[in-house]
Length: 314
Image 1 (tube, rainbow, N blue to C red):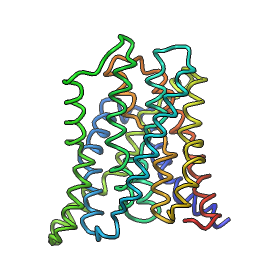
Image 2 (image 1 turned 45 degrees about the vertical axis):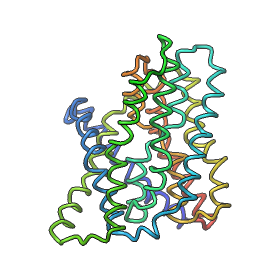
Image 3 (image 1 turned 30 degrees about the horizontal axis):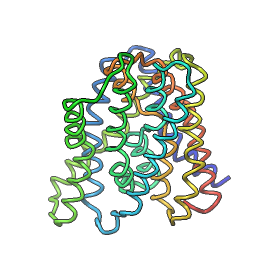
Image 4 (image 1 turned 90 degrees about the vertical axis):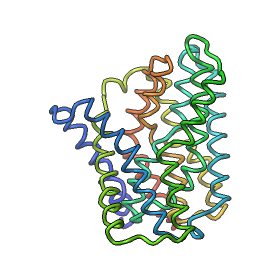
């Protein structure tokens, strides 16, 4: 019972904020435009500041783990390749790119930060996951959505250059490296700066979760039901079942293991839909997977935490 309460206390506040966002949207207190702007603010400002705050105040020697970053990269690459292989079974070629992206690309930045903050009080280990996975996620998404576009697209120099610029200027990546650099150089933080950064960073979790909840449309979750269910099963359960034991064998415990779990079993990120639509795809499969994985993750992630707690791994 104690382990179950630990798991519920870690996940339920996160998902209740999403439920609040959903109902605020339903009663028109939050509209789609406002939710989009909140999401934009969280990803481009509040979340990078939160990651900077946690890393700049920590000892980089204790945070950095090259083998875990490499592990995140390899596992992410394998996940992409697995989803690509399974997508070949889909009869509709137009769904393959969305199926691949929605199956591997999780909401580590937002939900991951919220969960780690709720359990351990900081998001330090999340930096390893983001460094190892996010650049690859972005590159793979552009490649897949371009090559498998309905118009039969192809990669050109302009697309490649735009992708690389997007990675280099990614606010989350910039926040991580700024925090690491600040820690390495040992730059002091005056009380005024600490309190300002702390107050700004505190807006990331509640605003991000409320905005995510406001984006949920239950009707869309019924579209493309069969591929959506398969995609959701890989995103929430199967990848974690395959790769999490390997992380345990490599010595991952506590915060680091929860970071690995977030990478493997977090719901599909909302940005997948925006990216699919902007690159000429219909987006129905993506939006359905985002909605279904977000709703089901309240149960699946609680179950994973409970299992790890029962095994005394966290």
